[in-house]
Image (tube, rainbow, N blue to C red; front, top):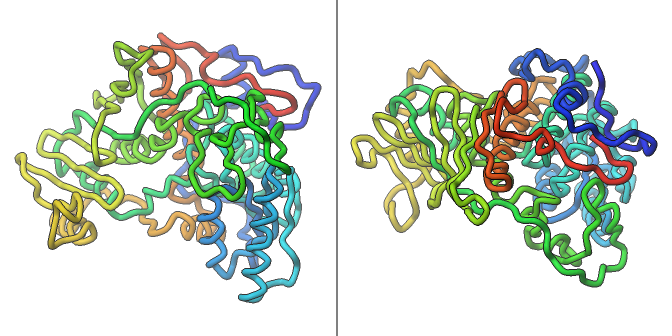
Length: 460
């Protein structure tokens, strides 16, 4: 099996985008579907003592993540990485201050510009990655191939080629990987999917999701670059575009930057929120490590921001639509609506258990309505889904047990692939048939869409 190359080989030939090259180098022996045996294969031994971690990409989302990791006494934060000196030094100071107040090893946290100083460091057990999407696969593959467990923010990858590569690398090196699609660790989403999986609302004919707009090409004008920012490295494998604060906020990042709205660095809300709500749709359908078989573009795809559809093998049609709740399963006997802090089970056209908002559902709560639905319909359910109450706690537990977590690489990759396929409907007007186990178009698509042109030394 050919092993994907992740970084550094400057003399390497450019990526071949042909179908044969894609299937051989990115997916390895893809004649066997990229399906991981659920939670049964593991690394040779569990890590002992404290888990030493490095953190890469110190923006707003990482601020939340590192604060949570620091709450666990078994985690020791030993290094942070960012291409913006101000941010890496700020987080180094925060980590050092935390240990000064709460007890620690007495060794200062390292602050580095090059992620390889973390992924290749032999005394680090795991890494957390919260960079822009275009860096996810390269850093993840480097970490996995150097024996690290990985927590990587969603979407797991920037494109389909990278998704298959990450899964193969994880399997080859037998590591634990958690994708940060944290809705799977919220009870309302799990119960919603269990209701669907146990046939409470009958056969699922359609699903609607509300996730925001597709990405557009980057068009931000050039601005003065702040001191201490390695902009060439920030762009990395993507095109070297002019600096603009919308892509990378100046100073401490206190907003979610707009690189995610660009095709060069993200995938718009299709991948940003789709990696949450399409992920839940696939969980409810039982399509983890599988996916849609068809993409249907909206008629006016060049200007459309809604209307693209994904079709699954059982005939279920998922539509990107407007709406206030994230994901709605429409069955022959009822509906399940679920969003963050929102839940509704409707039967016969009437809400049976529902919490839609404090204003609309006074006198109750989402927890109460979910618990009531669970008690009435799932007490003796044949299908029970993986229970996680916290995405990070689940990752830490699995690093110790050497089992795979709730959103392992196979799950994160299949959800990301579904998002990327939906983007093809908006970007290319794709009305395409897709093989979700061999990860190739049957008709109506172009293999060039599966990957990207990688800049400089960075390759996947």
